[in-house]
Image (cartoon, rainbow, N blue to C red; front, side, top):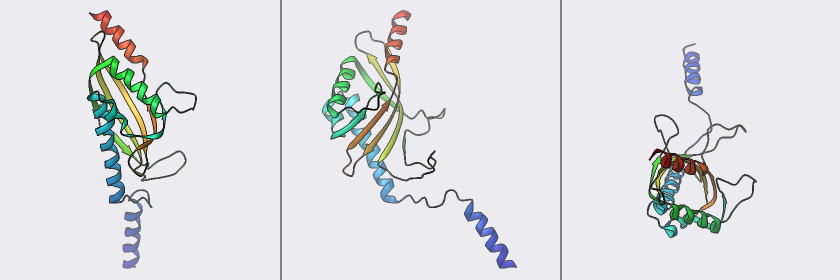
Length: 185
């Protein structure tokens, strides 16, 4: 009887330990860190330092890009991303990026894998990285300060280049912020 209770208690304790079958390897952790550090070095570093070449080093030549104004399901190219980044860099200066913003405590900017899904699937795949943050910059023409909520999903290949980039942010909010700034001065 005593053995029965030990087995029962052990079963209860182990069954309350969360989803079964999820194994996060040290290799997956290292790949995830390498991927988000590459984003910091190239994407953030390229924008903050106004270095389009550094920015573009992150992206494979065959990448697919779904920009913030793309709603039709089609994808743009690395050249399209380069042109959009050049416009952004020529319109704003003094860039900074505040990572996070997921919740009021600003907890975490980089996420990979998924524990829950509407499809019921779980993954520890480190090649898909979700990134949250707030861009700040100054409009070159007016001096208006702007902030832009930023959310992207980047899919990395085995050599650490982004092959798929999906971006969500409200481009029109910059115009509204500039207008409000000009009305306040």
